[in-house]
Image 1 (cartoon, rainbow, N blue to C red):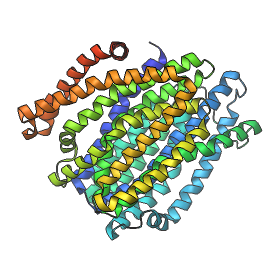
Image 2: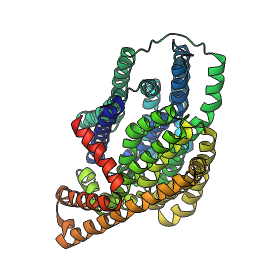
Image 3: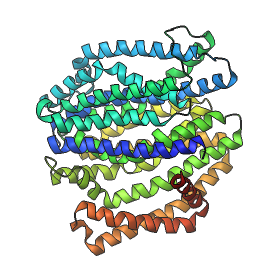
Image 4: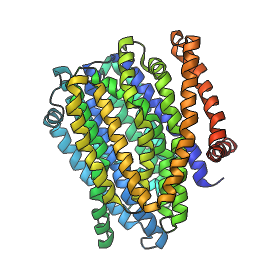
Length: 506
C-alpha cells in the first residue's frame, strides 16, 4: 500500500476521533452549563481561535505548500533556509499579535459583538484574553502542519489537534467546579502546547533542520508575499462571515450563539474530515500534477465524486434523524428538551452546507494548486456582502434560524461561482462528467431518505431513546443507499468500495 493511501486511512480515522472529541467537549459544556449567556460568551471568544487556525491551516498552507514542494523538487533550496526564515518571521509576527490581543481584548470584543448581554460580555472578554496570551503556540501548531504535510507526514498534525480538543473536554469535566467555563480554555491551551511539541518531534525526525535565521532569498520572499496577501484574506472570509453571524446572534437571545454552534458542529463533521484528510492529500497530489492536466482533471473528479457520494446521504440522513443525534449528544444535564428542539431547527437550515461546502473545498484546492489565488479571493470576498445583507434583512423577522439559512445560501452561491470558474478551465466535458455523476448519486440518496422517514413513522421510532433510533435507522439507510448506488452509479460505488477494502487490508 502506498504511503498516501496509508496516510488517508490513518488520518481519516484520527479525524473521526477528533470530531468525536469535539462533540465530547461540547457535550460536557452543554451538561455543565446548558445553553446560556455563559456558553455563548465562551463560543464568541473561541471565534478568534478559529480565525487564526483558518489563516494558518488554509491561507498559509495554500501558498507555502506548492512553492515549497516545487523548490524542493528542483533542488533550489536544499538547506530549507527560506522555510526556516519564513517560520521564524511568522512566529515573531504572532508574538506581537498575542501581546496586542491581550492588551486590547475588551475593546476588540465589544466592537465586534456590540449587542452582548453583560454576562456574555464578561465571559467573552476574559476568555479572549486567555486565548491571546497563548496565541503564539496556537499559531505554531498550525504552521507545523504545513511543514509536515510538505513531507507527506499527516498523522502527527491530527494527533496535535486531538490533544487540544481532548484536553479541553477533560479539563471541563474535571475542573469546571473550580474554574467554571474557563476550564475549557485552559484545557485547550494545555493540549495545544502538547500537540505542538508532538509536531516538532516528528518534524525533527524528518530531514528538516531548523535554523535561527530571518534571511530569505529575494525571489522566494517576493513570490510568497504576492500570493499570501490574497490567500490570507480569502482564508478569513469564512471566519468574517462567522463573526457577522455571531454578532447578529448575540443580539437575539442569549442561547442563540450556542444553538447555532451546536448545530453547525454536526454540519462540520464531513467537511472537517475532508479538510484534515482527503482534501489535504488531494491538494498535495494536485500540487504535484499541475504540469499534467489529464492527471489533474482525474484527481479533481475523484475528489468531487468522493465528496458527493458521501456528503449527500449524510445531509439527507441528518434531515431525518438529526433531532435524535442532537438529543444523544447534548440532551442531558442543563441542556433541556427545548434547547434540543431549537438546535434541531438551526440544523435543518444548515444542512445544504454539508454538500456545497464539502465540494467547494475541492474546487478551491484545485484553483490554489493552479495558482488562481486571486480568483479565489475575488469570489470569496463577495460572500461577506451576501451574508451581511441576508443577515440584516432576515434576522429581525425570523430570529436565529435566519442566520443558519444565510450561511447555507452563501455556501450555494460560493459553490456555483467556483464551478463556473473551475470547469471553464478544465473544460465542459469535465463538467458534464461531474453533472452526470451527481444525478446518479442524488436519486439513491433521496430514496434512502424517504425509506428511513417511512420506517421512522411506521415504527414510531421518535418515541425511542435517541441512541436506539440511530442504531436502527442509520444502518437501514446505509444499506438502502449502498444497494441503490450500486445500480445507479456502479463505477463510483466500486471506487468507494475499493478504497474501503484497501483500508481494511491496511
